[in-house]
Image (cartoon, rainbow, N blue to C red; front, side, top):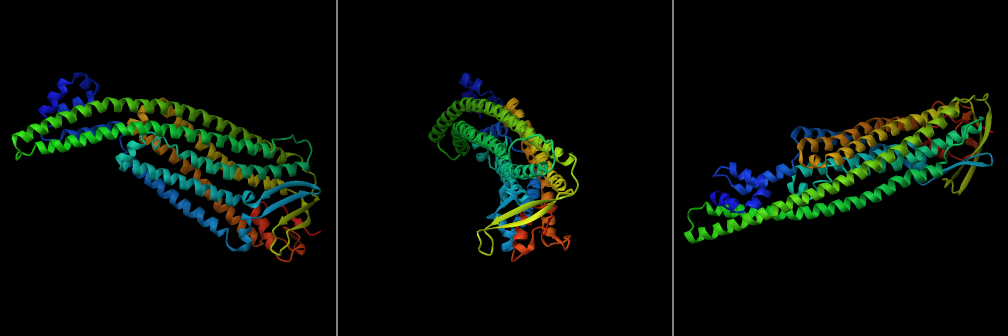
Length: 482
């Protein structure tokens, strides 16, 4: 210990740059290994782990998302049972109003229950992966040093957001817009809204562009942290080497010549360690500056996405509200043609003619779909606000987020808590849609003189079930026999 203190006194400029280590060594007891104390001190000061209550909370959230994954996976497989139920994956649905084609959609995009279950399954899987990353970072100091910035700021949370958005929002908006457009044809005075095609192009292109930019930013951060990690591991290696020399010096059985040689090696190791530490601080500060700019960009991108998403939701709510509250004509039967391809009887396509009763049918359809849309959109807007919050905090207090245990805990828990809060109502909706779908698929509550499709046009009821599964709970549209 005396040798270390004397060497620090001789290297005043290095000691001033490494004042923290100098102060630490001043209070280390003579019997304590100073190098192990330095390693622990630097690790705890620059890369603190999460507290035990925080880890318990994260484990509880991990358990919740594990249950959600099992639940959503069960719903997906239950919806794939049998040939009739599995047709949603490869069939298309063509709905036409007279000679005008109102909508053409793949069933897997129209099926509200499937998009809900699949998107939430992906979201919970990504959330679970993020929690596992945090747990490994907390247990493994090497992993924590390799990614001191990316893991604690939750950049992986973005991929959960992307999977949820693309699988749910675009398909739901397209279907609900088609329903609202068809309903407004029976009424007068409804203003034109944004086309679903342009809406989906904008709606998917914006997060895709942001995704590519963020991949570049993550690579840029990884390069900066990799340079930082090289300096860190060089310092740790020197400190472990010094620790080994220190243990050998404490053995009294060695000769005086060996003791002198070990002392010289110890002094050289101290010099190299002191040379590493200022460079370590420099690399850390450079990484923090880079992360500050990345967080500022991230906040701006999320604000833009939030504005686009809010505007899109408002546009959809306005057209739906007008469709529901316009004066509705008296009940009448409107001709409709449903055309399906890839039928089980070998035909490439078949047109099924019928009429639709306009009495409250479209209003009920739109209201029911708006329930799903409102829950999903509210959850996603909440998640975006949480992402904006942690990004804004990261841009302002980047160093605290990296080096302070309380800040690291808050930044780790906030996005995960928001993701869990958003997942619970969506999971409930998955079960609700599946239950309604099964209830209506089995033909309950249907009168004898009306059916979803004119059954005499088909040899089996398989296509009825396909249409039912493709449009849950859209089955208030009742087609009477022609």
